[in-house]
Image 1 (cartoon, rainbow, N blue to C red):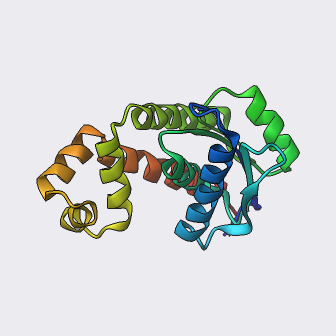
Image 2 (cartoon, rainbow, N blue to C red):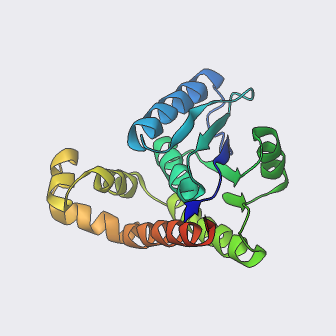
Amino acid sequence: MNRAAHCVVVAELITLRDSDTQILTELIDSAVTQVIRALPELWVEKPRRAENPFSVNAVLKTCDRAFDFAVALNLAVWPQRFRVHANHTTHADAHRALAASRTAFSVALQGLSTTDSRVMETTAQLHAAIMRDWKPSRAKAAMAMRTAKNQNEAAAQLGIRQQSVSEALHAGHATELVACERAIRARLETLLLTD
């Protein structure tokens, strides 16, 4: 079995709480660097800022990791947010599709039914809504757990008690978010494998 073709992804910043363009472009540049470092195995074309300074373009080796890209990018800019679209065509087509969509994550991939797309997009909307409601302590705990081996290590990174990490993860629905990410990745992988 071979995986489906490369995956074009585009992201557009949607939460412009800070009107300072310089601060936002620095935030995006930092996020791009973090995502490249966090997911080194993914790239055909590494993420880079697009012509619109608040957009990012990339090409992934496979589409099953498109939501992983979206999550990593959004974690890197939290509390700001990106909307992300993935397809098999071009960046220009992906930007047009993103402009037409109002969801946090949209997909238009070969082999993906409308129903599967809607389920993934709705799951991604719920994922985004939970992240949007995070308090800073929940965001810090969730981000630390992405790199830590366990809650004790995350607590040491943050300089807080393990119980505080546990409470923040529970309140931030971290386990459920990771389950959503795994489910979308697994479904994309299953649907996009070809003979």
